[in-house]
Picture 1 (cartoon, rainbow, N blue to C red):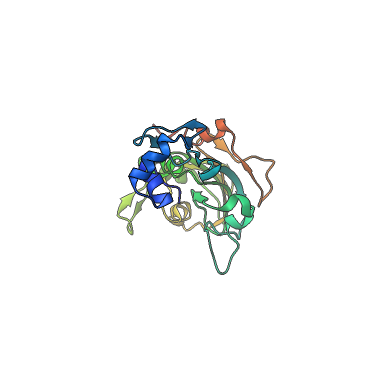
Picture 2: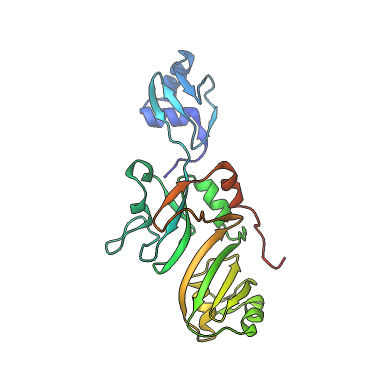
Length: 243
């Protein structure tokens, strides 16, 4: 877990197991740097990815990581699992430490998954009021009709949670294929919505979060880092699709 923002003196005292009086002496001796600059103030604020050194020794040198992964069917969105391969198993050991999953997909759903060690970035997308749109391609067992479109726009009442889903946009692509855009992530939400029509989901694939689309060059199981623009794209369009 990446530490949140805090005071430099508190970090040094805890990390080095020394009293704050000793911290003051280290700063006076100009032995501490933060992000390449000499640290002189006890109350200096540091962030979760501040590069903090005592001389040549790194006390905190964590760097933020943001990854896009093409999750295959049969891989679980978890950090550990006794039965199945996890999405973290697809990431090299050197990059895996500290990563968490942003927007999970169930075992039989494929597509875009994001991973990061930056909890503030991921929370900005996943908090209840964010309403970041996600887009899925769905293959159904039975033929679709226009009735589905209106029902998805109205929302569905889920008895278990005692809530009505936000309006979702359904576009019919073929007799048994549809594109669904929604701004929530309730438990098995898409499968449950189609379940109201007794129409089982045969395949489900997420290809967009916000304005970020899954890179078509990534085969199932492959990953790559996000660019700076892509990190922002995940947050774009954070509103209900029918607003």
